[in-house]
Length: 329
Length: 289
Ligand SMILES: Nc1ncnc2c1ncn2[C@@H]1O[C@H](COP(=O)(O)OP(=O)(O)OP(=O)(O)O)[C@@H](O)[C@H]1O
Ligand SMILES: [Mg+2]
Image (cartoon, rainbow over the protein chains, first blue to last red):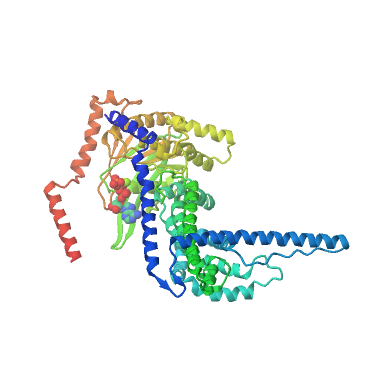
């Protein structure tokens, strides 16, 4: 009986797999497009009716125009840099030819960073801050999840620091970094360290809390298996604890990365540290008629990058997780 | 493993075992005065009503719970922590979901037989999977095999530890009747071949009579203890079809049923049950108000 019922459903499933419902596929692609088109329409309508001291609020067309301008500016700046290095090389070669003992000096190009260089700076900073925070938060979360005492000891600190806006930390971090990080030939700039530490400070909590919760809610039977097998602490963590809490850890990591990215932009604006935040702030101060459109480009870019970062984490989670069927969103 | 010379010395001994669980309303005595002597190679079934404390007895023998009074002695050593010489087959298989059937068994082998070479480990894992007829699905994840197959792998994992005592908590409780019968036959085969000492919890009277050397019947909790012990003197190997008409078999069966449904009656009549439910509901509603 069971077998007879099962066969048609399997065939049905196989068919469904081979011939995906075209209507559904279209729907899946069409609805987001409808959403975007409606948004663009509303946006340009509203933009026409908002006048600011810097001129009319930019509509989609103005923003698109500025996007191409920013690309052009970037390419121009890159050309300039190439030429600068070319000239420098020729000059140095000439001097070496004249005087073989001369040690050629190589100076870096010092033009203002372009929009795309600012994007890169922000991305790099957020990744470093996020990775540092994760390297602290995951092991600490595991310890808290495994040991009730550790959790009881650390919990008040978590509750105290979790709600603090990282921007409140910023002045403290800035001062501490300038006092502590003194080096004649710094590998990283101070502003980078400040931003990264600020990001790390707020990336810690979601990962820490989610890891601790994930670890402390492992199936009791699996813990009993570990006890019967007398697994030592290390193999207990690697064979039982980590695989069971991967989903919880990734939930924490994705929350952390999202928060870190938001915080970084604000920190860059406030501290005038290089990055997308500084780009926005500079444009605001600049106050030209294109500024608002350029800021809008930055806003959309920030959103897009945040979205991509989350998708990347999801892909990693799929790779790492044993449960390939789990619904990940 | 097959040495019979020790057959008559007590192998596993529970003496005056009792346990109190701390609850908000003070300690709750789940078990009291549990005494049992088990010979090497014996197959024991624990039977009793739900909540009487069968799992608790098993967990004490496994070392997962600590007895409040009395203790357990295995081969003249006191049991006070879990270990692979007392392997447990859990009710819901508890395979690690991220490891294949093979890897699940391998983990147990690597952990318990540290001296073995890679080749020996592989052979031993394969041998144990063969024993439960699971070689064909060795590389499947637990999510990809049926409940009965998972339970088989769970048994293979326990056997691979070469335990002195095999502890099974309702190993076939979640399975359909047909699969259950298959697995019972497998367990009888394996027991005949390896001669492990087995303690199995079951709710199924037929299962208990078919498999056991002795059936240990427990009284209702709290303060549950052993009510009666019924030795099953049926020739092995046993055949379920031949036994169905065997008067001895049916006598044992009715003995167990009598114990459960007359001496340790626990079934409320329907009207009683309903009255209780209504009362519960009322108290809940007043709580909310
Ligand atoms: N960790 C615990 N803390 C408090 N009480 C417990 C604990 N474990 C078991 N008990 C209580 O001890 C009694 C016996 O429980 P146990 O799980 O051993 O029953 P059981 O016979 O295995 O029942 P079932 O057949 O339903 O599995 C129950 O009343 C239960 O509420
Ligand atoms: Mg139980």
